[in-house]
Image (cartoon, rainbow, N blue to C red; front, side, top):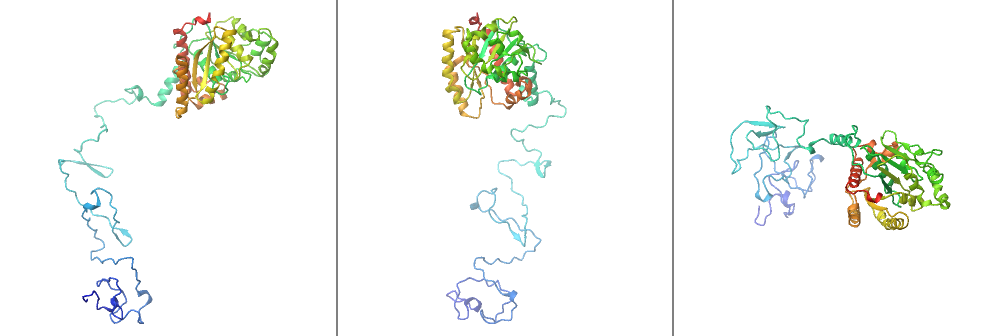
Length: 447
């Protein structure tokens, strides 16, 4: 090698002795080359022995270690990060298989006493017997201590099915021992809202069933021509069945039209057929058309604790008859903006009926329905309603529950269809709250 960095080897400098500028290790030889041959000269080498020039891959030094001896772990470089961090270096390989790293024992960690003792293997991991327990991990109880897994220590430890069964027994009340407070006088409640789809019929049916299952005598008057309340109580309401239309137009006594609800003691229903759709036109020429229903209910010989009137989604003569016959108004409000938009008109109509036809009428109960706790809109509507109506809004809120929608297809209320569901529990709480309010506040306006 000369002072200017040139080699004497013609394989490096070329035929003219010029350096190509590429460093070539003298320890690495190309197979099939001889010292007497010059690059570019004819050769008798076989084609497979021709060298392949690759400038982007440096030559790998040949190791003299046997193939079956694993390589030792490289010492840790402090500049590469923590010792326990995953390495970014490629795994050493020999041929096509990765070479496993040889395990080297680590020195003891300073500050932690190392005590010899028996060891235990869990899933292949060696754990010393004197290792302190992990925080939050509860050790197995002593074999001599009896721990019952069937008797929970706290109420929240009950499994979901057990809690659902307890709620179902409480709602169905098969023994009849649990009763809701009964009012001193009959409470006639009109369930009204001119907006459709807010849960008027569903609220009427489920509240009536909940009160009837707990010792109250309840009558449901279906004043909607669609007859959905009759469907929910499994009461026949096809054409030809005596219904509320006969009471309003032909003055048929209410006891001849009311039907006992099958499977629910102390519950009766006055059905509605499609004939009721023409009642508003026929009532125009009838004397005292606004008070026809009130007279029919007052002439009923039996005594009821509650009378629920399911109104149609309108403010026509049928709704006016219900407002005149009732002493209290229950307004179900869907937790959406449209339900609030038409509420002012309903309140105005109630005030007109109170001034001219029924001075005892009062908006006593507001029930929030179809509450979806996943949306902020439901919370905003709830806050607006509670701020406006105050204590008239029930604490119980009816959530969106598919069981409530499935029950009418089986001719049942959700109280009997799935008594352990959230919908049944919510309606049960609402009925209990209504019953307790009737006792705390005597029905003086009913006189």
